[in-house]
Length: 153
Ligand SMILES: [Zn+2]
Image 1 (tube, helix red, strand yellow):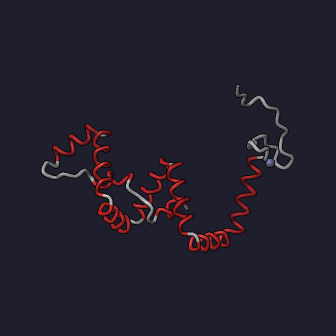
Image 2 (cartoon, rainbow, N blue to C red; image 1 turned 180 degrees about the vertical axis):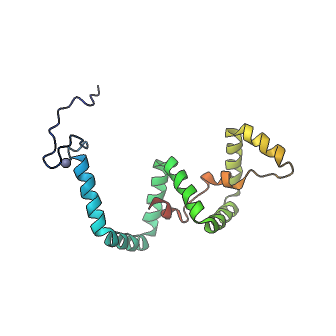
């Protein structure tokens, strides 16, 4: 049985809010605290993180992999944004990835066609003679390890 919204909460002494995290902390105050802390430490945090990444490339990759697995929608959105901001690198990355993963490319294409039968028919009709689906669509799932750490920042 789950009860939500019936627990009595004392208003926060600082800000009077009753919005709490599960651990009991006042949510607005915690957010404010985090914001200030980041503001005060942003350069140091970035620098620390840069150094840590350099010293732990394997962990960075592993973290990125795990994060992508746990956040497939955010991953897609991030990669879309990244490709938009870095079209040349995205093209190069995609080309290299395709070269290294011909089987996955086939599989992605097949899955995409299955998921978009209408679009596929129309597209093939309009582009008869060409074999591949539009590359910007096919790339949604292709980002792999390389450069992926940029996506989680
Ligand atoms: Zn508060």
